[in-house]
Structures are given as structure tokens and as C-alpha cells.
Amino acid sequence: MTMFGIHASHEQIHPADLLRAVVRAEEAGFDAAMSSDHFSPWSSRQGQSGFAWSWLGAALQATSLPFGVVNAPGQRYHPAIIAQAIGTLAAMYPGRFWAALGTGEASNEHITGQGWPRKEIRNARLRECVDVIRALLDGEEVSHDGLVTVDRARLWTRPEQPPALVGAAVSESTARWCAEWADGLITVNAPPARLRRMIDAYRDAGGRGRLALQVHLSWAPDRDEAARIAYEQWRSNVFDPPVCWDLELTDHFDTVSAAVPPDRVAEVVNISEDLGRHTQWLREYVELGFDEIYLHHVGQEQDAFIDAFGAKVLPELKSSGVEVATTDHRRA
Image (cartoon, rainbow, N blue to C red; front, side):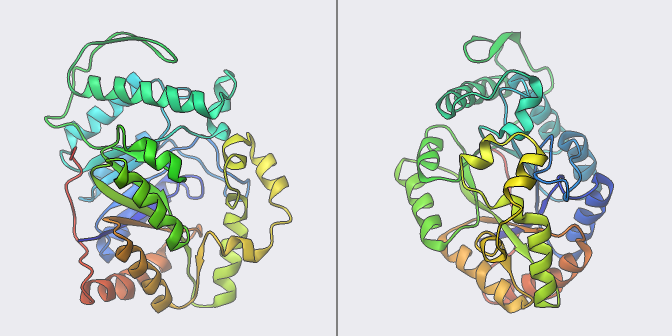
């Protein structure tokens, strides 16, 4: 049973408009949402970057949707603070909140002035953060000395059941590593063969829990307009690691993406004016075994996308045997 949700992109949309969008999405038939959590957008054209944790409280109150957030503890955020944020939202909205944890990007983390560690150090730091967060959510008093330092921390407000801590991965090696600690896996759309390898890497390493996919797409009634939206908003997001991890400023992203060709954007964004083609893409992801699929229309105007997909795409998926339903996001 696959659940379809909407992705809330704080880097592109003012938080007040984004709140209205998720309310509209629930009314249109979407049954879940996930949120980004960045300090900076990837381009000056995107132009926003609201604070996800303030917004999540409002979004959970304004809807009945389950929500997730992708977070990078360890540098910009101390893991005890993230544990407190997770614990409070999960206590207020039982069964409706989960967090995906990753190693982050320099564009967000450089603001602390601490320098940007090598990938293997970031991995080790995240692993420490996961253990700290999980122990705090389990009610333990935590002291820790390592790549992060914690002194006698204890959460006084906790949910009855800790929510899922999901691994965020864009490579097979990271997916395999996430299997050591994660309650599920989330990744982004890619060619089916690559996604199949990611899933296999996670499952073969013993990975448990649900599989989630964030799908970047661009839809408009006109093909040229859909392509224009994708190119204008998402050409700074086409770079593979380590480039996307290591650039620090929007100026850097805008400079390196100045000569990106439109067909390169089409490799990472599903672009079509045809709602049937978008439905077909989504069916292919379902067939790969994803339990949750979050749709991210990369345009800044969300209403037409929400209304069209709610009226045509989600009902078509449901009528063809792909069930759209809510789920419980507490720890598997």
C-alpha cells in the first residue's frame, strides 16, 4: 500500500504560502507531507528559506496529515536540541511525525564558522547524533564526548512511542550504511535501475522499515511552460555529490549552474504537461517497492499542481490498484 504526499520546499516558497499549500493539498486528496530544513536556498531565484521547525508546528495543527522533516544534526543543530524538537512534536501529534537524518550540506552548515568536515567525519558525527537522539527519546540521561558533546541531557517532554528516525541517502553506499541504524530509508527520484540498486543495498544490509521517495516534478498545461519552470527553479540542483554537498553560497550555485543545458534538468526533474505521463512515472516508483512517495512540484506556484494532481493523478493511481492511505509513522 503506497501513500502519496506533498513535499513542502521552504527554499522556494514563503512559509505562509507553504502552509496554505499543505492545507489545500489535504483538501485535494494528498494524505501526507514532508518538509525540507535548510538555512539557505540553492539559488537566489528560489529566494526563501523559512525555519522548518516553527512551520511544522503550525502545519501539524492546521491539517490532519502526517509530516516528516529531513534534518542534519551535528553542526548547525545540536543533537539534543533536535531530540527535543522531535520529542515535542511527536508528543503533541502522536503517530503523525517522523524525521529523516542526514549528513547535511555546506550551504547550510558553514554559517557556524566551524569549517566543513570531510564526508567520513560527517558520517561518524551523524552516527553519534543518531545514538544521542534515540537515547534521549527513550528517556535516558545522556552524556557524550566525541565529535559532538552532550552533558547530562534529559528530555522532560517525550512521546509515548518514539517516532521513526529515517536514513536519508542518495548513494548505494550510504543506503547500505543507513541500514545499521535507520527505521526506514528516504531518497530522491533517479532512473529506476539506480533506485532498484539503492533499495537492494539497504534491504540486503538488513535495512528495516518503510521506503520513501521524494519526486521532483514540473507540471503545467503547456510543455514549454513546464520546462521553463523546471529550468528557472531547479537548474542549480542538478549536481551530483560532492559538488552539491560542498558549495557554500547561492552565488556559487548560480555561477556553476549558469551554463546548465535544459536536458540536464530533465534528468533530475520529471517534466511533462501530460498528467498521464506523471501517473505512469509514479506507478513505476510504486512497482519498485516504495511505500511513501512525496511529490515536489519545483515551481513556486503550487495551487494548479495540487488541484490537477488531486483531481486526476491520485484518483487514477487509486482506481488502478495503488491505494492512497495514511500510515502510522511511529518507530517500526
